[in-house]
Image (spheres, rainbow, N blue to C red):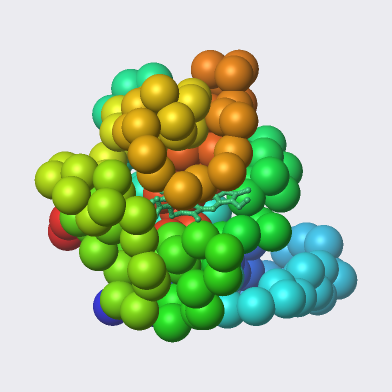
Length: 174
Ligand code: HEC
C-alpha cells in the first residue's frame, strides 16, 4: 500500500495526465498537445524515502522540531559521522549506531560498550532529550564518554534532530 502510494507520489506528473486520460477514454485527444518529453529521470541514488514520507515523519515531531530543515540537518550530521553510523544494521563505531534511536532506551544499543552514565540514564530518546544532549553532552549527563562539545545554535539542533528522526527509521503511527 505504502509503496504504491510512494510510486504515485513520485510519478505525480505522469499520474495527473494518466488520470485525465482515463476520465475521458472516448476523447480523441486531437487538441491535446501537452509537453511530450518523458519525465525527467531524477534517478535516486538509493531506495530513498519520498519527500511526502519525510514530511510525514517531520510532522510527527513536536514543535519546534517539526519545522526543521532536513537538508541543513544533513549538513550538521557531518559533525557526527566520524563516530556514528545511522543506517539499519550499520556498525557501531566510536559511538553506537543511531538507527532507531528515537524511542530507544538510552545506552541500550546491542553490542556497544556504553559508559555507566549512559547505561544507567534511565530515559528513552526523544526530541527534547536529544536537544539537551546535543547542547552539551557533558553537562546533560556527566560522566558519559561522548567527546563532543555540543551544537550551540538552537536552530542547527532543530534541523539536526529533524534529520535524525527521518534518517533513523522512525515511522509515524498509521
Ligand atoms: C568523537 C566521537 C563522537 C562524536 C563526534 C559524536 N558522538 Fe555521539 N556518541 C559517542 C560515544 C562514544 C557515545 C557513547 C557515550 C557513552 O557511552 O557514554 C555516543 C552516544 C551518543 C548518543 C546516545 C545513543 C544511545 O544509544 O543511547 C546519541 C544520541 C549521540 N551520541 C548522538 C550524536 C550526534 C547527533 C552527534 C553529532 C552532532 C554525535 N553524537 C557526535 C561519540 C561521538
